[in-house]
Image 1 (cartoon, helix red, strand yellow):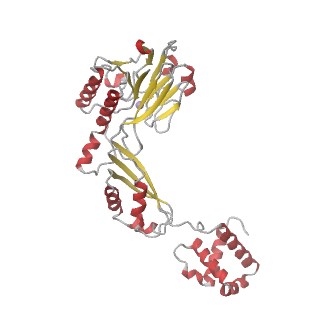
Image 2: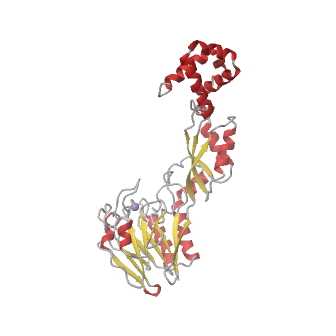
Image 3: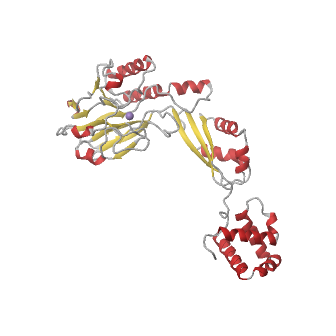
Length: 409
Ligand SMILES: [Mn+2]
């Protein structure tokens, strides 16, 4: 049996966005997050004693702002390369013509060329790895179409940087459909480019995006890492995602529906926050949603940002506020009426239409109708329940409600 790691989209030293107001200690962690994640990848390779490592493109982010980035990458890969072969393809961000074809890769790193697909063999493992780098940034043709036939008796891996048939939020590169990949009769497609981890197919063949190793903004929420792949002697394969990120981004949706007191806001945020797992630092986008009578009060609170920030940090779990979004609203008119009440309102309206005068009397005398007045008031005005007890007002309310009905009764 053998094991390998499949990672992609390292975007080394790419800055993390949306956490600018962090205290200096946390800011330091955020700055080195992509390097930390890469170190964890190397450590995982050592701990698991994997037989080889695949890096499926966008290892570098593009512009090299700092030569230290490359030195760091090469030195850590060098640690590994003493024992473990590493196979690299270049993607759109680190295309050969963009960043230069030659990096001083350590000896055991093999970089696939960009002219045509080629194959590397690990004969002792019966593994054949096929791959091609991006020669330039905008590869629009189906690279996989030219990949070689599978090597009989070998575990065939195709390394490819691709958006497959297109994915939301990603430019289209080296397009190919999962069905076309399947037709190649390989065992495992080690893909890169899409930053969200996914198993496009779980066998026959495996088609896997490991995602990036470190999320970079609120657009990249959830755990990030690589795929650890175990293959037995019959080539039966197990794929497991392993988290490597040190800084995470999460969206926290806090539903304020039915909140009885403004002070309950903290409890609701805390309860929702308890559900988050933080690997160290987690940038949290808090979205306050739902229907609450305090919506106006919440929106008007100019200290709210600061308060939410404190609630999160008070939880002691490395949660920091990325951004606060106020999406809660006053209770919708009509939403608080049960079906039974609604039909009762309809009945009242019908009575009123057939005999407008009778209803005034009815409202004044019948407690049941007064009660209904309160219920109707809820639809018409969430805050003005009491004034609606006046029968005249109730009639006005009914008139209003009648206008809002789509069908005349
Ligand atoms: Mn890419």
